[in-house]
Length: 241
Image 1 (cartoon, rainbow, N blue to C red):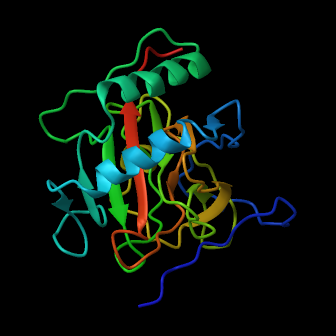
Image 2: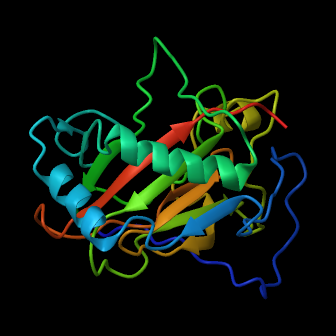
């Protein structure tokens, strides 16, 4: 089955107004240095390749779609970075956010898969815009670990697309936790989104962003463990501004 391709906004479109009576959420334009941050060549090339090799050699993979009923695609494995490598990542994150403290949320209902290797191939997944639950994540990050990745395979931000093609919001703020709360709905069709801004996938690039903005992996690629999209994901809580 062909993947759904989200229309990417250029900013030059003349779009209609949002229809009256439809639920809305605020729009926060994704801007580097404001709500997302990027660091290229985060580790030395030698260290980045060592991390990649370590992840690919893992034996404790948990399977997602299409192999199980999990909502997430491909396979994942915990403890991707060593404590020293993770400390390097978190020091950079704190500096970018101006925060003294980061922590991983504790939940007895959901596993927060932070510092987790995620390996997904072309036929295993597609873009799935979502917002991270605000009770579990304020900021998320992705370390891309596939050399020479396919184009349009990084992390994209999205905004709502209404039936009349109007462009809506993309952000969930307090008191809401997620899109279900904010829009008072059970689910949205995959076609209910425009692609807005993309962070390109580059080997050894670390991307940090606000988890309350609608986002997703732009796409996946590859048909074996050596050429699939490999990334490490991180999720943190912080003190609110």
